[in-house]
Image (tube, rainbow, N blue to C red):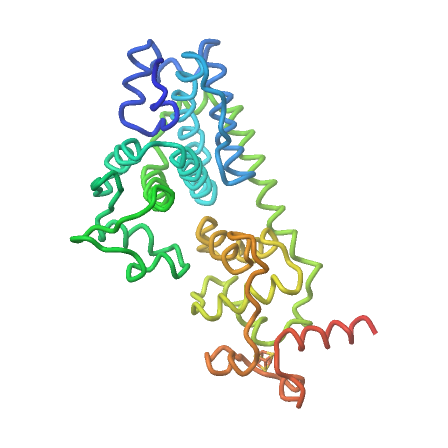
Length: 340
Ligand code: SF4
């Protein structure tokens, strides 16, 4: 069977070697019937990244399927480079990385070990268990916020952290995402860009539609004047690219979730920030809303806790009233007044 591993993981250095050995050259990829299917799959990779933050799996039954899958990867990267939009690049990198993570879950540890080496992650196998050097573990797991990922909560053996295959693959997801982001955009020659212009335009249009969806989903549904001053301030900070303290981000997301906003709607609010990092935001939001582990999610802190944490910003007359003990109470009173 030709190139099964390389087609599942087309970012491997050997993938293009396998393709080339089977007569598939990047130079022939841009036009002609031979690689029309690979180009279509390349577009699919980018669109599915945009729409679902994940590259969808495809059938790899025949040799032709596998070579096309390998070739679709550089085509997708070229498309993303031609569009050259920070949001799309990040989203595409995340989607490829999530795709790898899903596939790695079905692999024996030896394959996971090989992929880690390819990504420059220092790894060893002891008694058939995967261990990652603590420096790489810290580098790539720092953005995963739940407590179980803290280094102190994992077993450290002579400088290596022992991980289950699933957790190992999750850390590698971040390593691949960083690598793809750092490699893009590629320097695409003008002639190639012209040859693939229809696909580039199609993706640009989908991207514009997706961005306007993000921008529209919030306005009109939630009026700033019914938000408690603390939440209004936190929201305005987030939208102006001001780094929120962890407690502030937590209070804001949990509040918005409890009043009924979906993950996508909360994401839309954060998307207005100039330094919006979608992959990071999705993870943080889903963690707080409980979407990551199928729970109800966290309840926002009450006013007393907000005060202690220094994020009770600009309390107004209603806040200073006797019964005000929770930002959700403030919201309920304001909503009732609006309706009545
Ligand atoms: S009193 Fe409560 S609702 Fe008002 S700003 Fe402070 S934390 Fe928010």
